[in-house]
Image 1 (tube, rainbow, N blue to C red):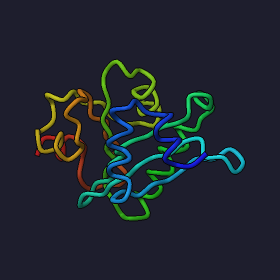
Image 2 (cartoon, rainbow, N blue to C red; image 1 turned 180 degrees about the vertical axis):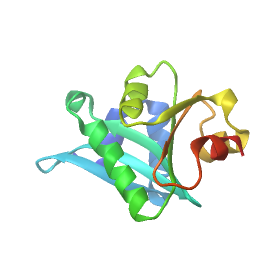
Image 3 (cartoon, rainbow, N blue to C red; image 1 turned 90 degrees about the vertical axis):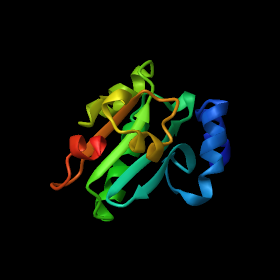
Length: 147
């Protein structure tokens, strides 16, 4: 299956539209089973911060650790780039996403705990949670998210 098909089948129509729209301006990492793409993560970089813009795994491949592997690949990529933080956003009802990120030591912040510039940076207008992980010493999640 091609990447664009995986995006369409792993995200909602709304989210797949924006994931596809930003494809050419993002770094894409994939997860495979054999030669088949089963998931992807769409990344952006802003100054010293890595952003997990979209993460998707095909429904029939969920629950097998692919999401966790993709987040770890994203973090490795951000660390190689020398970035201090990894950010993502989601909705509070998306318990699977919240559980995934918290299992990887991400801190969870409500949208009213972060500055609007962070919401803009993440394009998180429809999300109400921001997830943050410190990748190296330097800037803390709390100081970045409040600035």
